[in-house]
Length: 356
Image 1 (cartoon, rainbow, N blue to C red):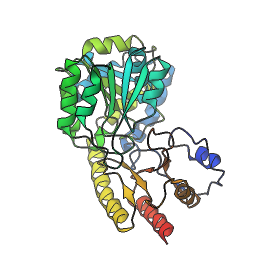
Image 2 (image 1 turned 90 degrees about the vertical axis):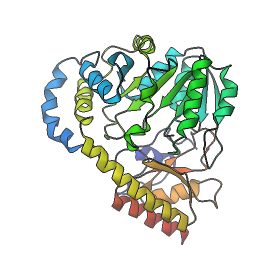
Image 3 (image 1 turned 60 degrees about the horizontal axis):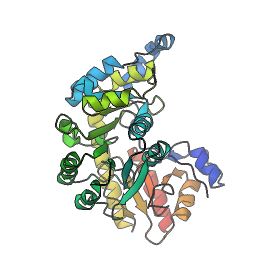
């Protein structure tokens, strides 16, 4: 069964499962802010029309400056890109031909980008269910590696790795001349001190990936950035096409990162709804990942393959993310975003119906 390789665009999933798409459905497959973009962006959107008549700043200078100030790094230590996918591709090209380890489960784009650049890719799989990071096992492999991809908060589990374990990896990667690439695409859904950006000046082998599309719900604009020491940023920047980030995305980014109230409101909703959902899962015999962010893995423990549950949910207007193409998960779980109170209530009603 060939299922779509990403979440969102639910019609592709309905087609691949040969199911009729109901008139009304809720898309839980995309891990975006349930409130949508900040209202200020809609208010300013008509003013953005004029931007399409001029070329964007190829250096994204204004946004770079504002992000660098916000993240407490130098402008030379930050590169804005056309979403996480472009930045991951650029890192793959930067690592071309080298030996790379991906901590699994993880976003499939890491492997695709590295393999397309001729990298030798190996996996390090965490124990299913707890998905805790054992830094000692990774350290043992470091002498034979050039880079490690580690997603924290992890996609698809939502698990946040213990800071001590990540810092141990970071120190060892520096000693052993091995890049540690930390994907922080969902760190905005945590408290402000959850990032490792403050380690950039100290660690020459650290690369951090960040996304602006998740918290601000602007995936159609494609916008993200990476942080590393200046020589690494310079080496990666020369691989980036000119004008890869369009003017509308730059404008949106500059506006969105000022919307602190939107961020705090979102974090509060996610925390409240996550508690309710976890309690419901416990009471109704569903197993879930111990997520700290705006999505989680879920499974019916009575099923080895979650396809029957997937089909049932979709028939009832609930669209989760399958895990067929998350290495080592192989369809044994489904991933759900945390959405609005009413939408999460609908999900619980349908999952309750499955149990009856």
